Length: 332
Image 1 (tube, rainbow, N blue to C red):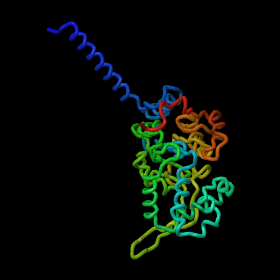
Image 2: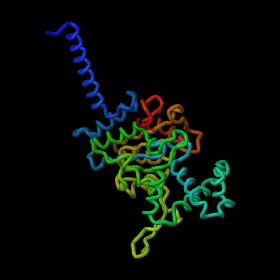
Image 3: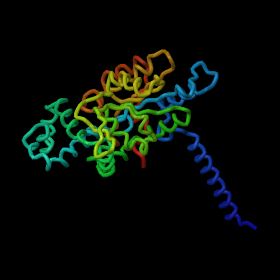
Image 4: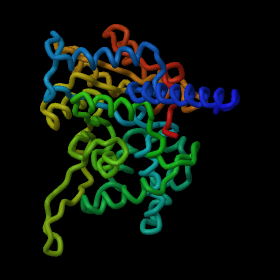
């Protein structure tokens, strides 16, 4: 026979097990567990439900469920500088021994001396020169290997973690939620398309053919009897601002019904997605959490959010307050 203690203990264990089961089931049914139960989460769920409900006036067939995501500042951190810029600076330092003239030539001199003030003063022209020098003169396969090796070993200066660990857990959940509901997810970024493609599938579940980005020109050549694509020091396409809708049209061939960004560079992409007459959802990630990540908007060199923030209220786009709306920022 059970003693009173044994009976009480058995009942307690049973209640605890039931509660754990209920909590687990609730968690399994919540597609966005890292999002607080605030307006942005509700808006996302409401949009997905209305465009996937057959018979609804807003129903969208699966082939047309296209969702586009900016990368820097939307899917992973972009401060204190864009990750690809950190890659460029590291490439200059890695190749400096083969280019002794760089120590007296700008913009390379500023990089080698870690003189960010001078580098910033050189502006876009200096950055383009650095980009062309470090991203060309090799085959596409060679560049892919360089990027793959760098992304596996480079560390963020503040968090001391790989850059691919500094992706946003709430956005990973959002990507999975959309795909579970018949959406096809694309990256549409101002970053280099060949810089992103080597790792986006592993990190985001977005394969290379679903990445749209800026590019330099490539040229087919036979090298040592083998066909290759050589990367040339010439800009091919800038996938930023007004270039994003153009890139979407050229690479995807369908108008998105959902767009996610964080800066003025995403303004035209959000407009293209939401102002076309069909059901369209626009979301902006607003960086407001200086403790867990960074806080910035109108006054920053990386990821400026000014015109797009003003347009959000006019166009009824959802604005995510990172501090208030996300339970956590990065994956555990």
